Amino acid sequence: MVDEIAFPSVNADPKPLALLGYGITDIEIHFLQIKFTAIGVYADKEIVGHLGKWKGKKGSDLKEDDDFFDALVSAPVAKQLRIVVIKEIKGSQYGLQLETAVRDRLAAADKYEDEEEEALEKVINFLQSKYFMKNSVITISFPAAPAPAEISFSTEGKEETKIQVENANVAEMLQKWYLGGSSALSPSTVASLAENLGELLSQ
Image (tube, rainbow, N blue to C red):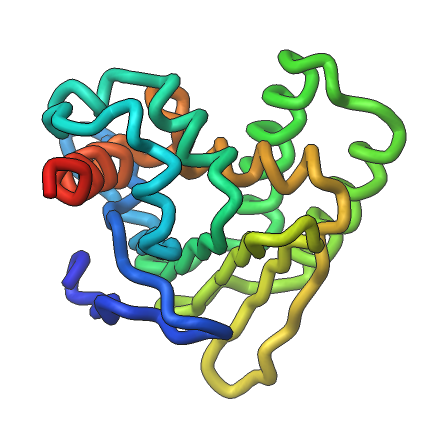
């Protein structure tokens, strides 16, 4: 349970992926914590085989190690982010946040060309048309094979909608926004991933 939202320990879509970490996005205003989304990070357990360099490290060490999270992002296994809305917002607000985060990361890596701009614009247009009611779900799926990532959006009373993210650089920076260690959106999710993967790596 993450803030009263249940995340199954295995997400079977399209193949069984294990819940490896979870957390929230929030902001503090005048000493009040306002929670926006709950996040579940799923991945094929084979991911542990790609993180052998960190075998025996504690979660508290992994949490501070950006190389570990880079290896997590680049590991060629299926991963999925399940993001559940706690406090309703407009899709344009989420889209603007995503656009800035992804564009800044692409620019810093010198990967922001016309193709990336076009792919990012498609994602933003898709999100801007949505209203993120409480309990709406955004699912971002990253396949193991070199295939497009996919963003799906579902909310009560409406049919699920999807968009493909065909640009690999945009997909990578989307992963880094959520899973990128010290620069990631949700410190609680990063800490949870470090703790749980640390345990798996010690087995």
